[in-house]
Image (cartoon, rainbow, N blue to C red; front, side, top):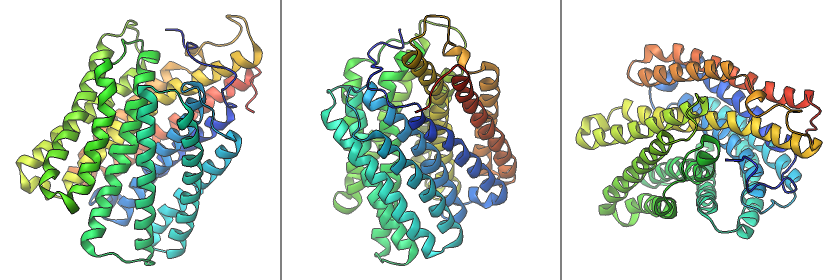
Length: 428
């Protein structure tokens, strides 16, 4: 498949706009690794301040950072609808997201109300700016399965933000809720953030990037039409059932597990049918991500069968490690190795109007052996993190290997930017 198919040079934002997000994200992954080494108790219980800081370093600092940067590029180019004032949006979402995540992590680690207050202001403002401008773009975008998935994911991001700001106010001591309602809000925040914003966005983007970059057949049309909407409806039921329909909770949870399993298996089947059989590190990252999703379903099912396992500290930690680290970080990491070189090649083509052979190809933009080494480090880090949820003595080793993986990821992405500049590319 031609990577230029369906893309418009004229609507593409400057390379610097998404690149600043992509180069910042690995630094938060490095910070998360350092936090594990410094405080191994971050993998001992889901409720420790260190665990909460670690979770938000990964979800906000790494995952959301990459996802917002990717959407800045993807919406105008793939959806055919530009974001209003894109340079302004990039500045007023990247800086607040970066500083707000640091402030929120500081708040969890120090319990300082001022840190929570700064985090609330920065994250609330920055993400709201992005949501507002992206919503305008999505409202004008042509209908399609990718656009539908992104729309639902953005709606979940809005809900996640509102719930997160509420919980931050509670942490800072500026607002109070009954314990039962607070517990429901925490569960809904996690569900909309992980199963809504992260999973639905990956699903929506997968419809476009898996066939395009991995040279596979397209997703089955019927599956692509109903999956994201069905998961969104089940997520709403999951979040509201504790208050209004307690008997429906098990149905919603089983439906979500089934939908996740269908997506993972369908993606693996498509990848097995890819037309180009050459080794591809991005494909390995996606396979690891899909295997982790399947493992999440297995761990969830085990908790339904053995209540003692469901009540243990290890169960939610293992589920979180598999979903955030094994699935989400893996898929996003792998896609960075396609998106960043592709955008470098894409913008060189647009700026220089170069003839074939005069600029590096996508494959030449990034040394494959270093991406392969980084994948090996990431794979070992995931295995150690899984082990550390059951045997805490592995936590420091897991953090150390994750730190090496994050640092190598950052250096690999930086090498693409240097190669782009060395061939005459302009970042703005």
